Image 1 (cartoon, one colour):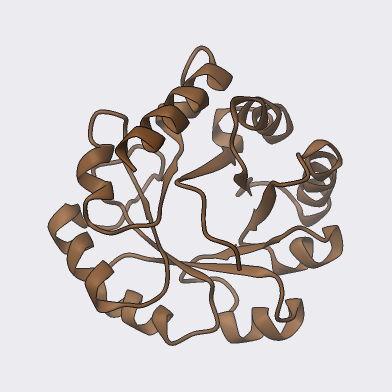
Image 2 (cartoon, rainbow, N blue to C red):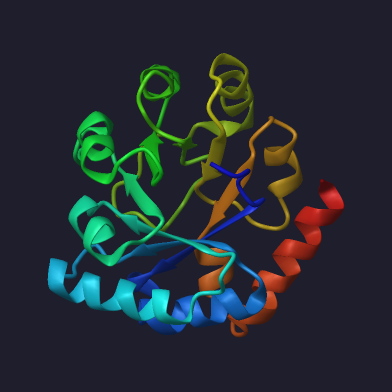
Length: 205
């Protein structure tokens, strides 16, 4: 797997049509994008993913949240699995060796377990307080995040409450990428906000 971009964009249906969100995210410069629609049927999600793939830049990777079947049929770059989703070993068996598989974790124990699984990256969160999930897991914080980064070998994606104002402290922990939802999708100009994020992350890097 190629190195993760610093920005991990998420087209979350909670903020609008994922297809339109994805278009704005790509125009802003995002090149790693997860399609997240928790309430969609498999058929609706498949339609959305296929439409996004039809206009995705050639160098962009599109990840499907939760649904291994949709990732497989759509030929998306991969899937992101939560703790309650299909086990990574089964997802790897279905998708094969060349697709991207990510795993959500919320503490050191889960991260260490994911580090031993056939996944390409480990997501950790929430780092800060977040309103994106109705019942979020306990806040990890940057100190624990740094410890997790030191303890595992897989690339780490930080998620949860990350904003431009606090992203520098997150990057100092050793993460490879930061996933951003509300700070981008709630912006009046999503495309411009993505561009701001990429410019900021390049400077910090």
